[in-house]
Amino acid sequence: QVQLVESGGGLVQAGGSLRLSCAASGSILSINVMGWYRQAPGSQRELVAIITSGGSTNYADSVKGRFTISRDNAKNTAFLQMNSLKPDDTAVYHCNALIRSYYCTARDYWGQGTQVTVCS
Image (cartoon, rainbow, N blue to C red):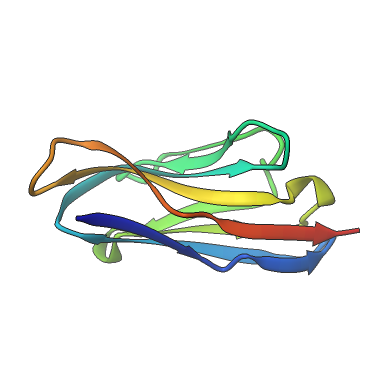
């Protein structure tokens, strides 16, 4: 069984910073793309940032220059450093990863989500 567990969410004032972590565990053979998505109340889930196993990254326009995604391949962990946070960044942040396990072909896995609340 493969699991993704997020941590690092919380309550912060506008202009502040948070660092999210996503740890993948289980019978993992390889992890291709890892990413962060977010969903605000009444809105659809949207892409925040993704990173490939080789380190290539892509960001939503709304977070470029403020958020940085990174990963530690040896620890099967991805991070999202969020700076200059705005109230519009308030959402539940979900980790996503394309993982090949010992028992399944590559498929998407999702974490349970971590709440980020930015106060003005």
